[in-house]
Amino acid sequence: MYQLVDVTTIEAGQAVEIWDQICGAIERYRRIFLFLDFDGTLSEIVETPSAAEIDCEALAALKRLAGDRTVTVTVLSGRSCADVAARVGLPLIYGGDHGLEIHAPDIEFVAPGAESVRPLLPAECNRVRQAIRHIPGAFVETKRLSASVHFRQVAPGHIPALKDIVLRTVDASHFEVRTGNCVLELRPRVKWNKGDAVRWILERYRAVAEQAICIGDDDTDEDMFRSVPEAVNIRVLNGALATTAAQYCITRPEVSCFLHGVLEVIHGMAASA
Image (cartoon, rainbow, N blue to C red; front, top):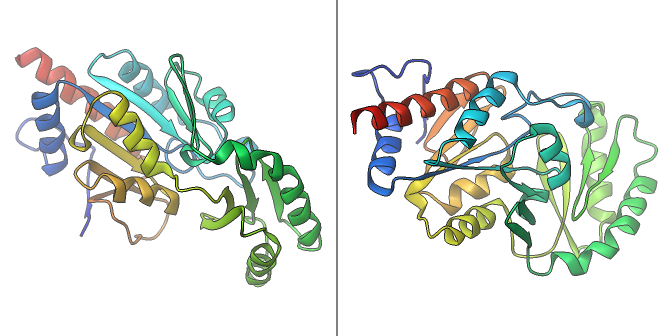
């Protein structure tokens, strides 16, 4: 069962289990790996996806974390790599399309099988657009390797019909549909998700799950939590408490507090070394 954690205080003698676990990983391995979702984690949930901006306090913390050799930061998003990288604007590792692609100055990776399905995506999106054109507020966002059917602005009474239409329209032999936060995700039917991306990055750096901190707010982030149960896994709450595989939960405004807390832990350990 997860803990709802107050991350606003990390002074000596007031550390909770989450900070003890992070300290232990730094002490043992000398390096930690931070995996962050974007929408609903580093940014507020907004009505229109194109309007999302990174929280300024979170950005300030990420700038400092990215400059610390103890930390490797990855942003794993449902957005394309180019989109999320432009919104963050830092030289980090970026995983786009729920980890189907991973990019960094020294990394160019696409999940096995995903590239072969890519030519089918535009036509698939057009079929879905045509099928849902009569539902006000619904729209399809085509990305590089996946697509999203957004329904945040759809009247609640129309949502069941929307989901049914999308499920009946999508070519299930090549694509799968997963439900997220007011969105249906159309993804290539390949065995790859955010959890696989986390594992791939850790293996690339010869790291282990205990070195990872995974933070996200949506059902696709549960793939991260289940993939590395030994990590510090944190579910971000944007509303009611959620069923999760994470050990800890925090609210979205506390994400920046947590990131600054990680910095304080790192600097405190370095000072006492």
